[in-house]
Image (cartoon, rainbow, N blue to C red; front, side):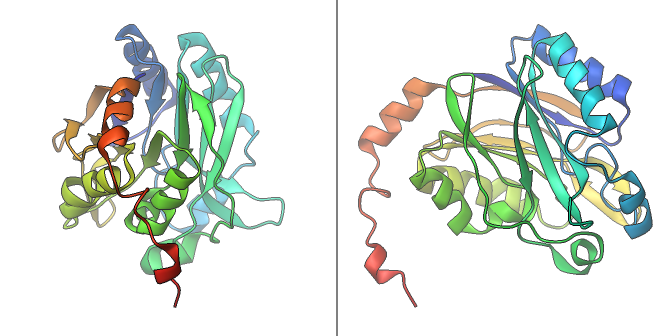
Length: 256
């Protein structure tokens, strides 16, 4: 499956439509955008709540129309207004036919910024098929917890898709942690970051696709980019045939 990661310093629906068309024109079956793409991330609690919508809200309808028009699956971050009245940092995956595939909430909130804006997501980590691969979604800080990527691997994931808003000085997440997560679990990790400045945050860029052997398949620089990468099922099979991590686990040793 060919995917595209949209590393951007801002958002408008016409820009999303252009990115979707460009990605589809390069053969991509999936476009992954950053964390909180539709609203911005570091914009304050009042602005986030004002922008929050249910998963099938007006913004979702516009994003769905873009995905269906371009013929490409789309994963984007947005502020979700839950049925309980809470606001969640969420990501929604739409199929290339416009059909909703999953809605994932961020479970690990990063520092005072996240905690001031969002409620934490619960115990719900679905896998869905996109382009012949079983995919799961984590959001930003979530991928820094090895337990969650391992959970996806044990459930049969081929790829973990990660909308993120990684800021300076944490380049190590993109350059070291993301490839390590891919290697130790024998799967692809696609990490789509923001770039530029938002309030007092400067985003790192460095959107990364890491393969099941830990090798970097593609990585963006610091500026805006449409990063294209191929996720190869044959490479997955070869690495898994030689890999030992999952087979050699001893869960009885991992309890407190």
